[in-house]
Image (tube, rainbow, N blue to C red):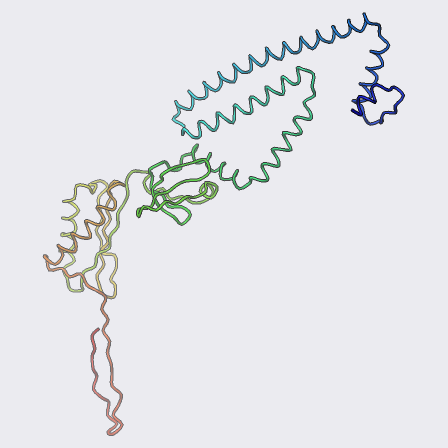
Length: 319
């Protein structure tokens, strides 16, 4: 209303810093000084110019919309050919569509004669504010994009990360979901996953199992080695190549320790591990091999007798 009064009253002082009002005021004076024929001609000329800009803007809009849809279809074909994760595929395409539509809108606004500097400033400031408010979320998002692109692990892999381990159930843009062997669900943010060590247990498809079996001192080591080799050869799940290892690893306090190493498929790891423990427990006694338990020999010496000054007898206690 104030602007309208300023335009209607030429004698009203206009602030020197109001450039837009000054231009409109001058334009209003020019229109008042024109005759009806000149005024109608000027209005028609301005209308024709605006119509031309409007037609150009509509044409640019139609062409831009077609290009955006065409590029979206092409990207979808490329991502599907490269077998990119579906969630990442959709997200990248949606982001590119939003950016393309913003640029198209700015082009159309520029064609209509509206200055786009203010629009760019608003978009930049809004983007900065959103980025600061969502810094942690954006870090997780960036980590999710890296994981989906570089694929250090995939759905179904068994991994150890952030002090947790389990099978990868889902890889989302912001977090990774693990399923533990005891059926717990663990959700780990992707920001920490992408910036830390991840142990992918099943990536190669094979795993090495290691056992440590003990036999008593005095048992036949060669006999124990033959029994263990027979158990390995009888299990078809254990690979013949690379060859298994059986070696005397340690002379411990209570047992002679034998280390056994064998290669199996990642899916067979736990079943082979438990089966071998059970077989050794049952078979060793059949071959005269003893699986010892921790044993400690304690010698207790009695103090000298105060009566005769002679040392007392020494008792031996086996525990």
